[in-house]
Amino acid sequence: TKMLYNDRIVERESLINIEDRGYQFGDGIYEVIGVYDGEPLMLDEHMERLERSAREVRLNLPSAISDLKNKLVDLVAANGLGEGIIYMQVSRGAAPRWHEFPNHDVSPVTVAYTRAEERMTDVENEGAFAILAEDIRWLRCDIKTLNLLPNVLAKQMAVENNAIEAILHRNGTVTEASASNVFIVKGGQLYTHPSNNFILNGITRKKVFQLCDALNLKINEVTYSTDELLDADEVFITATKLDVVPILKIDDHVIGLGKPGKITRRILQEFRSLYLDK
Ligand code: PMP
Image (cartoon, rainbow, N blue to C red; front, side, top):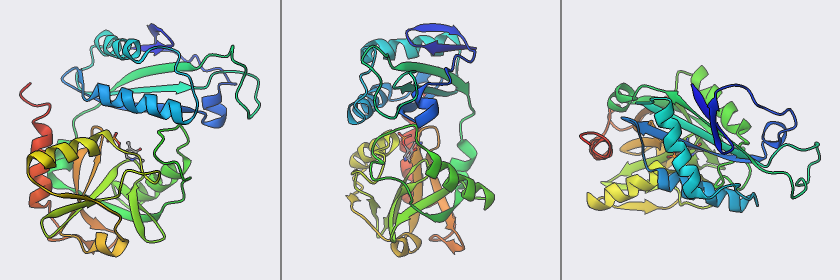
């Protein structure tokens, strides 16, 4: 397959410089974009978030966002990708290892590749389990940076407990999950953590806001506790390619009736119409 390396689409191979700052410091940003039937979903929104992440870590993107977008579309076509994802990252570049930013003549390094992946239809239909874990991340979780070690450790704990996700909390306040956002349903309304520095403002999350608006479902963007989470009628998570996944059990607590809830299923159905029948 092919990959994007800076501004060129080339055969995929390892071009990693051992002094790339992404590799050594996690000094860079990334995006994962879902591809459905050969079409990247919500590409503009992902590129806007990339621009924001770049700004927040003071990284100058080496090319215009519109060029980058076109390159990603070209990459999908070059690889003949139908279902899957695009992974792309921009690191602050390769330079002798010092913590401070390198000289201005060092350019950021952009790479992107695609990966074929089946749709997650079964887990979306049937639901999955989650665990609770402490949120030990830094205080700028709104930036999509390469530093994912706390997320990796939380996800590993989930997988070792036959769960799809670790739902994170700070002192009993639910933030998000290790690689997804969390919504709860109580009394016919939805609740989700505000989009501030404690969570990544997911592109799927934003889409759910739009869908709920059209469905006349109220979303309260407020914090809620782990007790409220466990006591919810429905819980679901959202992320690129996972879309909307009902959570049926968290640790040993069954959520609601222990099966995908009505409101969750309604939102999932709307979400699917974004890419089905196109
Ligand atoms: N939160 C975290 C910590 C994530 O890593 C992700 C992405 N997998 C999300 C939320 C969901 O974001 P999106 O819907 O843009 O994929």
